[in-house]
Image (cartoon, rainbow over all chains, first blue to last red; front, side, top):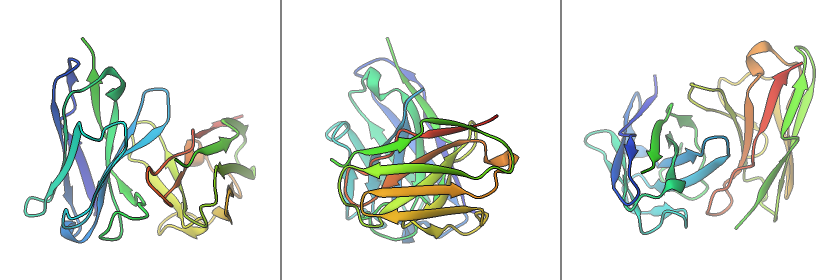
Length: 122
Length: 107
């Protein structure tokens, strides 16, 4: 069974950093692109970032570019999102999601985790 | 950036009803359109990809149509487990944007 489990969400002050992790199982992790999507409470969904199977292609939303870094460790079956210079508007439920192809073009979130909550507040 | 708009934002319906949700893109996106189902506390679920392809394991009462700028998601006969929030997403170009969602509630 394909499983994605996010962790690392927390309450942090503005300007601080946080690292989210997504542990995966049930599939060959290093064959597929992965994505981060967030859901702001009471609002909609925002694509955050994507990474190709070999980390060769990365994509970011303008709202996080330069502050967030996506990465993966294929040996550990894990996806990460390093979040620096956090802002209150980054408060959201963060989901990781699996694609069905190795590249990030045409991102489709075929399988999702349940998410981890990030709250940025003083 | 491509803007996605969904209608209605909420919908009340009964078990057995046929319902349709509409999604419109601000520019031509071909068939690069996906539909997702969200339920509180659960992992979201991909229903339709490529505008009309049914994801494996998704009941056949779900269907998607459209191309270019106008798309629909139809549930042919609502079941109790279908009451949820539905989102469209364009994967034509970054940033990969979502519609604002349609909350389907029990009448």
